[in-house]
Picture 1 (spheres, one colour):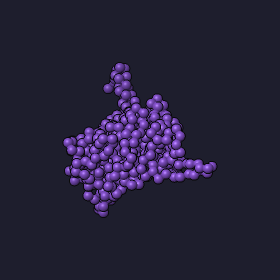
Picture 2 (tube, helix red, strand yellow; picture 1 turned 45 degrees about the vertical axis):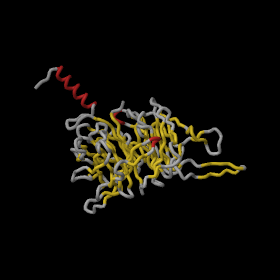
Picture 3 (cartoon, helix red, strand yellow; picture 1 turned 60 degrees about the horizontal axis):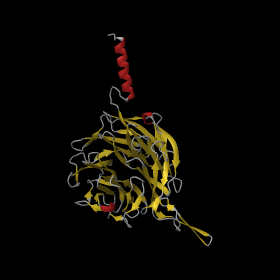
Picture 4 (cartoon, helix red, strand yellow; picture 1 turned 60 degrees about the vertical axis):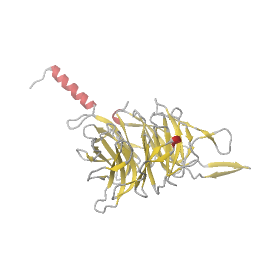
Length: 410
């Protein structure tokens, strides 16, 4: 069959549009991008996410250098134009690498910044996209001079370094601590905000609170957040005692806060109270599913109906896979109940470190230390998880530790 000239042009235009959207005969358009950091080669693997299948395809020129050594955490600014990677390194050698995001999710390195403390381990961009919060495991050394003798003392607590983000360039500007002066007095503000010992994760809530998880004493250190300036203000002089024996993660969803305790294999639910206090939720601690062990991260789905926990270990000698535990969230009380499914918990790649939901809220993915990403379909009516249509495991980069997703770049 011959086509008219107009018909041939029309078909060419359709094909061009389909290619531009990332469509193929077997898939849909690209609904977003994913970046996965790995410590083995200090790399960032980039993927396009297919709308119809959840399938991952490599971004051109992927993988990218992380801009440092031992990448530990990654965040993306709302709108997807800038990506920030924390390279933990060792001692004072850690840095924050800034990348701009181009067509097809390609990363271009811009520059690096230093946090104020030592050994940065976590990064988060606030919901406005105006501020970046970096968690350091050790606050800066205290240097004092008395009678001409200089003494350096290492601090036993961590800190948060705050940066303002330039929305046009992604560049960072330090936000100083207006409530606290440098050691020794004077009029110079501290360049950091102290938290508890050996912090490993922080979360900024939409309600104006920042919570730092201190694994050194299994407490939570709260600050209130000024959304206009990024400034942090102490709400209490003490950390919040949790009763956990091995805190591994914190998740904030509205007024609900969930902690994972690997020591007792449980989830600790709280509600946010006045001055960023945490009040134990009705019912208290929730046991993780049987045969699971070492929960390290959690996710609340976009509708606030389902709660997922990634477990690095198991007590099941017949099935040694890492898993995802699934729970339903009571819409009235916020209580967690194990999701009724014989397949729950769900098998994933080995050594998961992070879990995210895709921009269209159809799929969830985990970054696994075995160098893979595992994808699952979320049943919107039940919360049950199932494998992607074309296989759920994708090679990423060596010793993958975390990942982040963004919708199409705007």
